[in-house]
Length: 486
Image (cartoon, rainbow, N blue to C red; front, side, top):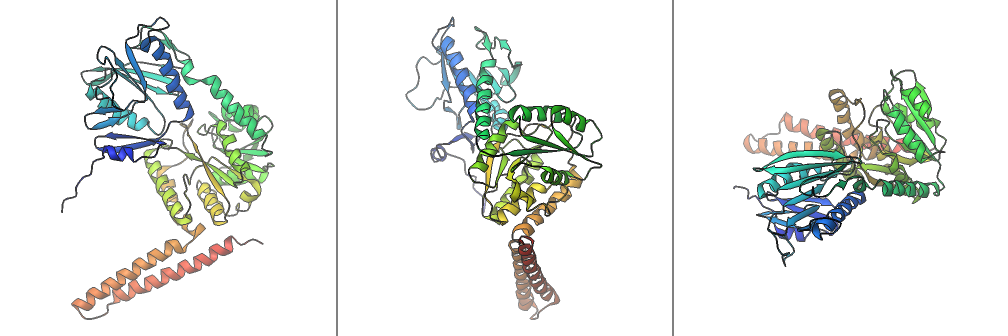
C-alpha cells in the first residue's frame, strides 16, 4: 500500500495555540513561538520609523505605501507571515476585507532569531522571490545588522549590509536616511538588564560564578569584565585547566580569582575545583568562551529565589554549535525526559545555577570530562530536587572548541547509559531483557513449528533475557546505595 502524503491545511493553522506563529511552506506546517522582547521591539520601532514618512507622508516622506506588521500572506498554496511588509498604493489602492493578502507585497522584512533564521533564509526568501516581492530586508537584533536585497529575475541580489550605529538610505525606502541605532534599543536593553541585576541583588542570594577555562585568552577577559560590571561584589572564579596561553593572567587582570591546575584534568574536574573553592550559597557555572551571556545570570538566580534548587539555561533552537550536536542533544533530552517523567529541555547545557549545598552532595559522582551537566541534572532529579529551565541564546564561541568529534563522540555515547544508571537502571535493562525474551519466544515458536524442537538459540536468548534483567535489578540497588546519605 502506498503511503498518502498529508499536506498541512489552514485548519492546522487555526488549531495552533495563541502563543505560536504558524506558516505553511511547500505543504509543510512550520511553527515558532511569539518573538522575544528585543525582536518585537525592533519590529515595532522599524514599523513606526517607516510608517510615518511612507505610510502617512509625514516627516518629509513621500507617502504612497501601506506598512503592516505581521500580515498574513496567501501566496498560492503557501501561507507566510513576515514580520513587516509593505505595498505600494498604486498596486494596492485599498486594504482587503479578508484577514489575509493574496497580492504579494513590494517589500518584506524578516527579523531573525535563532528559532526562525533557518526557515526565514532557506525557505521563505526563495518563496518571496518566486512570488515577485521586489525588496527584502533581513535584520538580526543580536548581531545588530541589517541586510537589504533586491529581486532580480527571481534571484536575490545583496544591495548592502549595515550595522551598529550606521545611518543609511536603503531601497526601497531610500527617500529618507534611516538610523539603525534605534532598532537595537541599546538604552532600553541596558536598562532592562540593569533592572534584572538590581532585582537579583535584592534576592538575598550570594552567588559564586565559576568559569572553567582552557586556552581561552581570547574571550576570558571580556567575559569576566562583563560579569564584574553586572555583579561588582560577586566571587568570580576562573579555573585554569592547564592552559598554555595567557588565560590565567588575563582573567586576573579582569578581576577574577584564578585557580591554577598544573595540567589539563578536564572540564568536569575544573567544575569540581571551582565548587570546592566557592564561598557563595549559589554556584553559577558558565563557559569562559563567550557563548553564555552574563546578562542571563539574574534570570537563573530569580528561579533559585523562587524555590528551585537548580536553574539551567536551555539553549533555544538554533543555538547549538552544529547540526550534528543539536540532533544528539535533542535525543539526550528526549531520553532523559522519558527516564525522569519531567521535561528536560537541555540536558548538556553548561550554563546553570545551583544551591551550593545541594550541588556539593554530588561532587563524587561528577566525571572529570565534558559530561558533568548530564550527571548533575540526573542526580538532582533522582534526589527529588526541583529543576527549572530558562530559555537562553548561546552565541558563537570565541576561539577553538576543545571537543573532538571522534574522541568525545564516543564518550558522549556513554551518556546514554549514564543517564539510565544515574536515574533508574531498570528502565534501560528491563526493555532490553524483554526484547531478548520475545526474540527467544519467537524463535522457539518458529523452530517448534518447523522442526518440532527447542533449540540452543532459544535457550541462549531466554538466558540472556534473565541475565540482563538481573543485572538491571542489581544496578538498581547499587544506584539506590549511591544516593543514600549518611
